[in-house]
Length: 111
Image 1 (tube, rainbow, N blue to C red):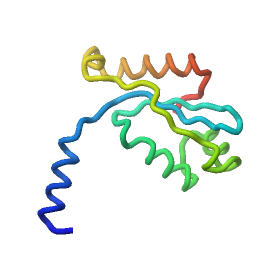
Image 2: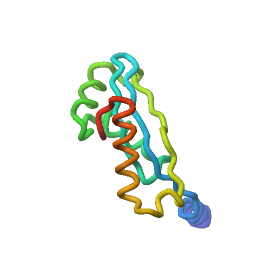
Image 3: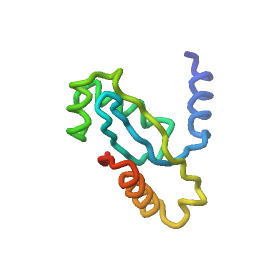
């Protein structure tokens, strides 16, 4: 990659719109669900799958289900996108409240 191309790619990455929100990982084989929050929904799936593939995910029940069922038994879904206006009331507080709502709604464990 040429230096100019690299600079353009970095600039485009920095200028992209980041969307925070709530997501779920669902084990289709067992029906188990895990719900988490992310400051950037566009990158969280790769991070979660990477840690699971390497056996290093911090949520032990999710890692155990992944090890038992395999990658093909899992799906990833964005549940709720939170726009900047919704987060103006306090990002951490709003994210925590929405995470609690979805955990209760889906009967899911937290991530």
